[in-house]
Image 1 (cartoon, rainbow, N blue to C red):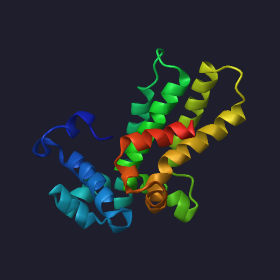
Image 2 (cartoon, helix red, strand yellow):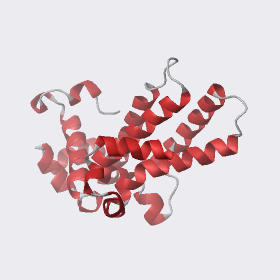
Image 3 (spheres, rainbow, N blue to C red):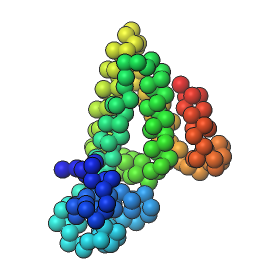
Length: 199
């Protein structure tokens, strides 16, 4: 079961208890980071008691796993809508990378949470890595369809480089602020130029 996208735009008073918990958890991860997240803080932010969090998700870890699966799935659904027959491949790629970059800059703690287990525990058997690998397969297939004759290994290398460069500002913001300036995080023209240089 996932967050009902239509409920996200509704008045918080009309959301189900489950959706309030999910949305509050996303906001808390972004505000306080994954390491500071507690069942008590989630319950307080959602306006419910801790028993409700446990009732719907059993553990904080289950709740976090669902949040991470949801946010990645939502991103990939948005990206899939960017594919059109009217645009050339580079325009599609540019739009996708800009979307990933802007999402990473807007939700850096969520991005970091996606890579927490692989980076800290060397655990690649997590939903976010599995979803990323599945999406890579779809993306490689689309590129080969749009540009037949391309070497698959080269496609994979280029995609990994581009996606990594689009999420790295969220993971290492200090490096980007120092080298590209504070305004990189708010200046969309500078962000577009960054993506353009990648392509």
